[in-house]
Image 1 (cartoon, rainbow, N blue to C red):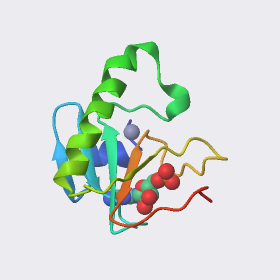
Image 2 (tube, rainbow, N blue to C red):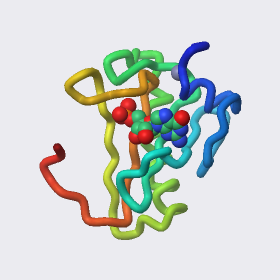
Image 3 (tube, rainbow, N blue to C red):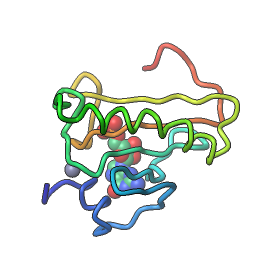
Length: 113
Ligand code: 5GP
Ligand code: ZN
């Protein structure tokens, strides 16, 4: 999608601090970290939000889930972490390209704000 900031990051048109990349997904450090480790995991395919995940995305979404532990291990999150998806207005989603926040290296609180 031409006006999507995360599509531009995935295409290398906007620079990012990359942690992991392959042909399907990209992981990069969040610009405004909310924990000592805060990265974003995105599919390279433009999917606007969790509300837009289709049956054809089953394999891609599952693939992301299998990669989380590898990325967490690479980042040294050996004491646990939090994986977050914000969806829509109430979820406070600001970037309309589906992404998973992976946060760690501090004790999280519950419930989230
Ligand atoms: P959301 O609120 O949509 O769940 O999260 C969007 C996240 O993207 C925010 O944590 C924000 O800091 C991050 N972000 C927004 N624009 C950029 C950018 O251009 N580069 C990077 N690395 N992170 C961004
Ligand atoms: Zn996009």
